[in-house]
Image (cartoon, rainbow, N blue to C red; front, side):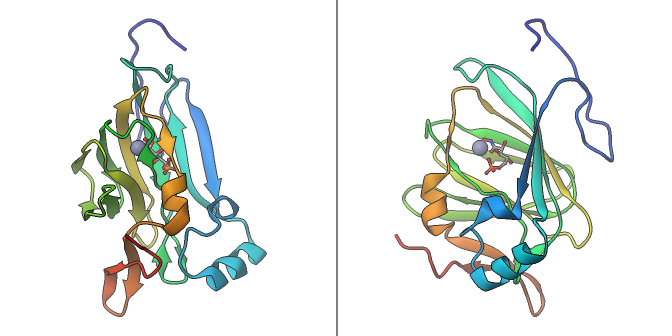
Length: 191
Ligand code: PAN
Ligand code: ZN
């Protein structure tokens, strides 16, 4: 990990950052209970433990004053009619924000605050999304064949709270309906 100012590049189309990074892979098996259609999930998993998303994290200390950045890549796919997505989280230090810059693909950022206010923002190349403090967030890839690729930056001390989302999911789901992408209420979600 460099203690000097450093640069790196994000070569396209791979979007794999040059230089040092921690490569995290999340497969279907790591997402039990996250997709609404449990039967479709079990059937898919029985065939193959598909790669759902990957993160290349630029290594920096997880402490206040630092910025953690990296690339998030959500692959195309669906479980039942629900598009592939990240697990999603609140920041453990709730009062910390995050910026996402979309480099490639199409999709949405599903967000909500602890009071249950929900927002779903479209992502396409060139879109910068500011996720304010307190808003939980999950990215969803709605492309048929293309990855959703975003660059993100957030405070080094933010930490991740996955538990709240694991319990009941986000208030909104992104699904394929009769006429394409639809944003619907999550029937499991309770206030
Ligand atoms: C991102 C996410 C990344 C993977 O770096 O961590 O997209 O999503 P999950 O953490 O929900 O698995 C971020 O929001 N960091 O705070
Ligand atoms: Zn985050």
